[in-house]
Image (tube, helix red, strand yellow):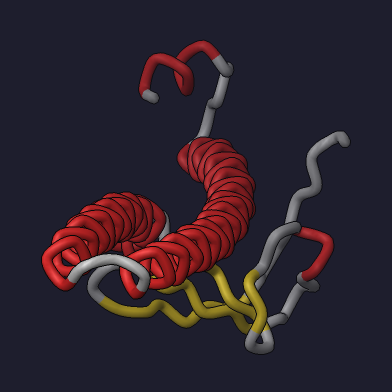
Amino acid sequence: MLDRIAHASVKTPTATAEYLLGNMTQQAYRLDANADRLIATTQSLMDYYKQKLQSHSESLKSMTRDRMYSAQLMIERREMALLNSSKGFLMQKNQLVEIQLTKLVHRTNNSLEQLKHKMEITSKTLSSYSPEIMIQRGFSLTIHDGKIVKSVHELSEGAEICTQLRDGKIYSTIDKKEIENE
């Protein structure tokens, strides 16, 4: 920063302070823009994974219903055949059906556990992008009238703002604002 000041032909302490404030303001705007992009990306990811989880949930429910229906049909067919045969044959067929149902339940439970694990990982990933976590990482939020400030155009001189940091809040009044070329 000192090299930048030396090369900027800043002659007085006041000019140096103005130069530094301008640079700090630019960096604050960049941080705000990055925070907004991060929030939007996080929300987009959360929406995407929520839809994906809902889709997987519906698919799994449908598959389970279909498999249960198929298994039920198979059981009914086997029961009819067993009624017409001997008691030993009936017991043998019932055992086969129970094995098939056990396999079906086992597969369904495995699928549910895998989806649950994916959902937990996705949830942890998405929660790491929350604004509270971002503040803990060193970012800040500037708030005016209860809303997050995203642009210098939202503020006027004399406006009171609150900047939320990791360890507290700073309340400030806007003395001057500079608008960059858009």
